[in-house]
Length: 285
Ligand code: KIV
Ligand code: NA
Image 1 (tube, rainbow, N blue to C red):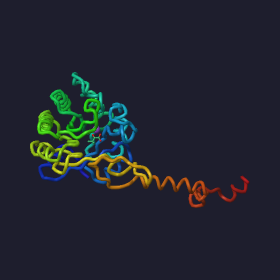
Image 2 (cartoon, rainbow, N blue to C red; image 1 turned 30 degrees about the horizontal axis):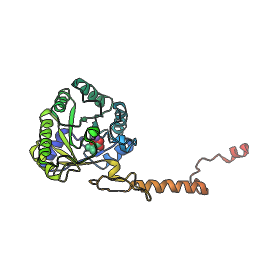
Image 3 (cartoon, helix red, strand yellow; image 1 turned 60 degrees about the vertical axis):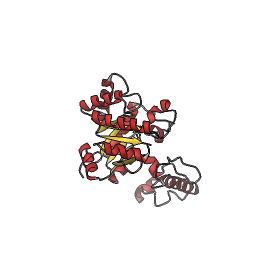
Image 4 (cartoon, protein in one colour; image 1 turned 30 degrees about the vertical axis):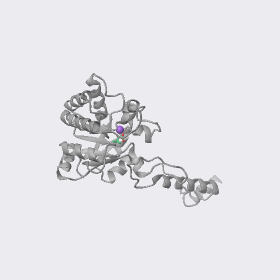
């Protein structure tokens, strides 16, 4: 299968074909997302929340992100475009060389094809430009930008006033001008996402942004119901459709294992494969 590139993504938008993106954080999730034929695999800093159990995306470090990127690369080395999130604190400085150096680490150590930055201010666009000029492809991300939680005050939809929607459009255009190959739109009204998609040449990838974007992204754990359980509520964002209840399968499998060990049904003869020859057995007895 052919490698997905920033160019093939642009071609998809031109042809009106939807782009698919799903997060992956480790070897098995990368294998599954690749086998499903999804275009773009995002090692999101949502890793901090869904894999590491933090309340926000802020705590995860660049070294930790790279560790996850490496596992994802081993799970999906050939076909999908691999994008890694630059974590909070790795790219926001006036010195844009810090961002470039850290982007190089995501590529050279993490094996990523591209990186993602949150935000679309002039300062951020300047950073994006520097990183693209340094040879690393950049995916933009505007709307709800979870790393800014302490400034935003909570995980909330963005662009819900005419003025805010216009400034989101400005942000997206700025990122495109700076060289971003696509822009993620998170938690914005569908009409705003559609308008931004029509205004941009490069593709948009929506999450909680309606059906008018060039593609869709969801978090692996959310779309598969990784924490679904027969007796515990699982938090799932309102915009996320759950396509499976994998957590239920996990609970069932583990409960059966426990029960069969305690009853003596497992391993039994079927799962006790190693035998001595008769002769050795007699000598041993
Ligand atoms: O970290 C993440 O999973 C993301 C996507 C939701 C776009 O940034
Ligand atoms: Na992210």
